[in-house]
Length: 376
Image (cartoon, rainbow, N blue to C red):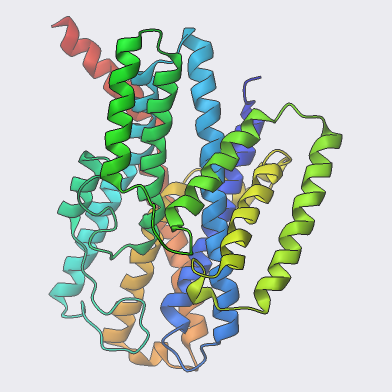
């Protein structure tokens, strides 16, 4: 059964809500962590919330990709890799290139005013410096080379790096499964194995799981959720209640052990993250009416841009405030500075997002261009 437009809007609104959770978490990190008002317990709670939101992003992506592949097969009678590839390219690349350019521009504004470096303990970043060439290298090689984070500067992009890899693997597997030629299957299997090796399949002799495996588990839960979406409401409610209970029990257990700083090393926390993903995979089957909330409905149109741009913009405001008027970052005013910067960050990202998040328009324009070149 095809995803209805209503369901798609609800899922996009959910993505907007998750982006907002991550933005608030990073805003707290940028403004409050260096201040004397920093509260470690509150920071741990916010850190856990942000990680849960990112895991939910992976789960949502798995759900959407499974839906996209199935729709692709139904439209053409077989899986068409070119259409799948173009849809992913126009969803990810144009906004990302625009954001890389914007951040590079912000960097040189700070360099011009001599405000690109700070010396503050526990600051989220001490230097406002990105490396766009590494980001382009990562894009062109699908994560095999380069660094999509720009030399580690734009931290939230770590999840985008994983998502690109998951999209590539999902496309390769769909092509292998739907191909009828064994020679083609063999070649694609070899390519898939090589790609796995190049991106660094996380197999370690460590007691903890690699974050990539946790992210992949979340993505897979999303795929599974799409496959079971035809279950009756009764069955879904049973699964939902069971998972909610398990997650709650592990959350209580986690609260008595370890710290959020070691979230990928403590076994109970690793399991908790995976269970959160499992719970969310059931929740997205029950999502409804989210698009009726005006804020979430609007955020759905620029959620991707908000996610990949908010951190550098927040840092830009922090570096600027530190250079021109440090009083704003004092304990007395830091809460107001954080709130104001967050509001302006969302405002800026929303305007850029509405301009550059147009995957359908970009795809249609490129298709038309290819047709004209082919005709000539």
